Length: 198
Image (cartoon, rainbow, N blue to C red):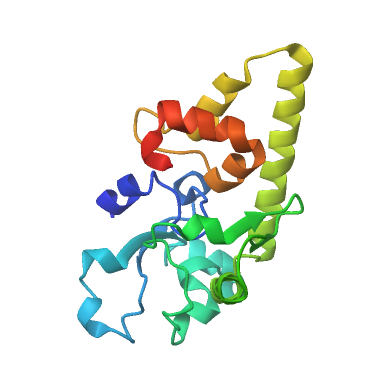
């Protein structure tokens, strides 16, 4: 688990929450379900760290669980449609709205749009909990941005704090929302200070 968390900067592979900070714990996720591909049960390339451990997190959410414990993920998964965390360009399929929803990105073709919608539904990525937390994060980013502009503070420093891994190799929650929110400024900071994340 430690290796997976370090590779993922302690973010859930599906929701980008920091389950360790929320007392929700993590579990080892089989990207391609064990029931579908038993031979990949111990294949490291099929493993990821997902939020909600069995002792703490899962009990809080029950049928509203998301990510690896979502209802859809407990059944057969269409791997041709599923956009999983081991795909190198998986983030390009999704966009975030200020109301907290995750949606297919605008520039997708029809097939890609279908894959993005399938994945969002499969993993329950628009659960009430995740929508609320993403909306709160978006509002916090708006406040920080406005405050930095009003006071003439250095936006680059803010972005370094928000987007660059800490010395102990951890990222802030909802990295992709922050990256999308700040767009070009975020890309510049990542290019200079964390090119491995581009």
